[in-house]
Structure formats: C-alpha cells, structure tokens
Length: 253
Image (cartoon, rainbow, N blue to C red; front, top):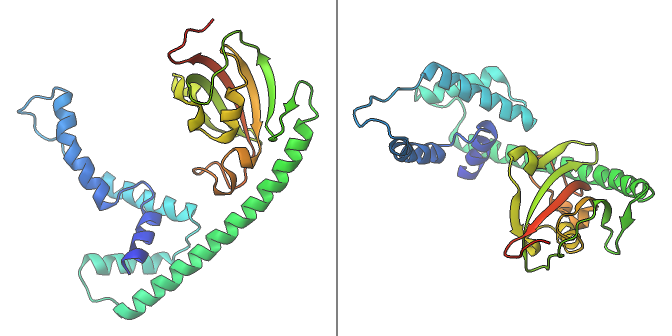
C-alpha cells in the first residue's frame, strides 16, 4: 500500500512537494537567511496559503495530465475532503489497497507500451536521419557510426581519454528541439573525457583544442534504450555542436 501511495504522490505532486522535500527546505531556510545577512530581529514574512493551495492544486493537475492520469474529479475531491476531515472511507481499506495495486500495475503496463512504441519510432526516424545525414557535404562517419562535420579546425593538442576538458556545446534532437546548452547557461562545461557518453568520448579525442564540430550520435553512442530525462527518449539519435576550448592542466597552443 505504501508503495502505491508513493507512486500516486509522485505523479500528483510533480513539482516535488513531498513532505520530506518540504522538511529539507524548511531546515535549510534559516541558514540561507543568515548567509543573506538578514537582521536577527526580522519577522518571518509568512506564506499566502491561498496561493500555496492553488499552486499545489495546479501542480497536481499538471502532473496528472503529463502522466495521462484521468481521474473522476468529483470522486477525487470527495475522497480528498473525506480524508482531510478524518471521515471513514467510503471504500474498505482492503478493497482500496487492491484497487490501487491494480491501478499501479495498469499504469506501469501503459507506460511500458508507450515507451516501446516511442523506442520503435525513434529507431525508425533515427535510422532514416543518419542515412540522409551521412550523404550531406562535409560529413564523415567513423567505424562506430559517429558522424561529424568540422566547422573550425583547431591547432591545439588532442585530449586523451584520461584528460579533463572544457567545452561549450549545444544538444538537440533530430527534430531540432534543444535539450541542453552550455551557451544558454553562460559558462562552459568541464568534465573528464572518459566520463561522458561514448560518442562524446570518441569525438573529443579526435578534436584539437580550438576546434568546433557538429556531431551526430546514434543511440548506441548516446543514451541507448534507457534515454535520459524527459526530452531524450529511448533510442534517440542526438545532434551536438561542440567547441573544445581547453585541456585542463595543459597550455593550449
């Protein structure tokens, strides 16, 4: 029962308003306030519970919509009101547990079917994209299937797998949707060459410092079947613009 309830909470409170997270935020707040040099005598500003209530309701509805969870609103609100009023449940506890467990199983099966369909579609779309992109002027393909195009050829050293590099990059799906960008964050990223996805590790070791490349990664060189986050689905082909700025600890030419 607890696992089912946790699942429903995670779906409903998509903004992460679980009790544990609220407790952590409450505990952290005083330290933040002190670091901000707030006067010791300052009175707490208080929270507008009317707005908080709306915000939780909005995030709950938004989370349910994103998960494809269609509840009977009247019964949902009745159950909420009865629970808040500490009334006896209209459904026996044993039946309630069985219902929620069955619902959890049904949701898992739907999510799995949706993921399998997305995986198959991404594979088909990705294969077509890779075949067409390989024919474009300036593009080369390595034995692993990595595709790359040199925009600017640098004159610095090439990093080794054990090196740490500084790069600027922008990542998009094959439909052009951007899922990450160090340019937008306003600062380059720093990481070990062998600490990233396979396609990046391979490409970086071919790039002299100062280079700017476009690279396309087939799923097996990116996140594969598992995908990553909300934007990168299973078996997605990824496109990157990568600018190798520096090898940390080494002077660039």
